[in-house]
Amino acid sequence: MKRSVKLVLLAVAFVAVGLGYYFNKRYALEKRYAPVPEKRHKNNILRIGIIGDSWATGISLDTIISDEFLRRGIKTEVISFGEPEAKTKDIYDNLYAGPGTPYSSSEILHHNLDYCIILAGTSDAAGEMGAKFYAYYSSLIIGDLAKNNIEPVFVTMPDFGFKEVTDSLGILKKVRNEVSSLIIDNGSTGNLDDYRKQVSEVLKDTHLQDSAIVVPFNLVCDNYQKHKILYRNNSHLSTAGKQKMGRIIVQYILNKINQGNLHSPPAGIGAPNIASSKPLANIRRSGS
Image 1 (cartoon, rainbow, N blue to C red):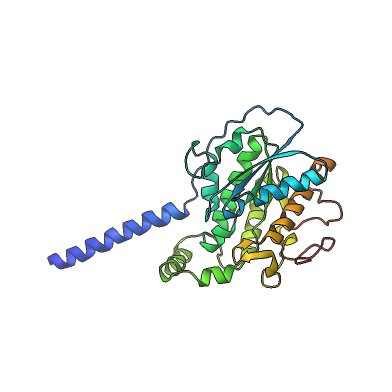
Image 2: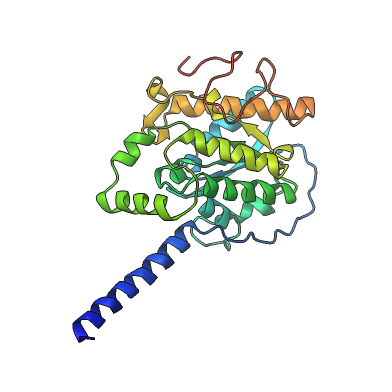
């Protein structure tokens, strides 16, 4: 065999191994960590954590949540940890990253929290990680919070400018997403409802829906194109959008506190269907 042919074959093999490692590293469903629950102490202040991607960064949502509770006579302490563009796997890993590590949210597990709000999904969808990937790591986050005696408050996959975001990707990322959709069984990547349905099925199959407060995002916005006033750009809520989401989250937590029933929706709201993109009848519609 000619030397040039051997070099070509070697180069092809090298590229194949490299791509295999990259796709496995990016999309693999890795094993969970071993959480060590801590003893919780009751107190007069409601302690709430927020974790997620860029939707959990900054202090605006912290303030909105705190002010909404205070308006109802409840004092809170809110801590928030977010990482811009973080996928659900990154959010899960951050819970166990050592203190001082960039984007570590390990304090969530050691702060005597009552509730932890989970804001994730836009980066998974924008990166076309797939519905199975999103549902798997969402379930790990919810499960480990519950094992640590922290009530998870899971906000389902947000509606956002999904097509606008994916259309704006560079050519290399577009090719990567096309290739990954062909060779990796991560479920459909073309519809946000696929992500919602998949996580709904996983939470039901694992019985984690009984351990979490599930807040359907469609109560905040059921159609990005029709209610852009709720968005700062195609991937993030505006102040008005955050305020609306904050009010709904607080309402769901208060319902749990007052009713003591994990599956009871807030007063005046019908039972949530977390896979549905249609707004519920008894709550103000998006943009109202």
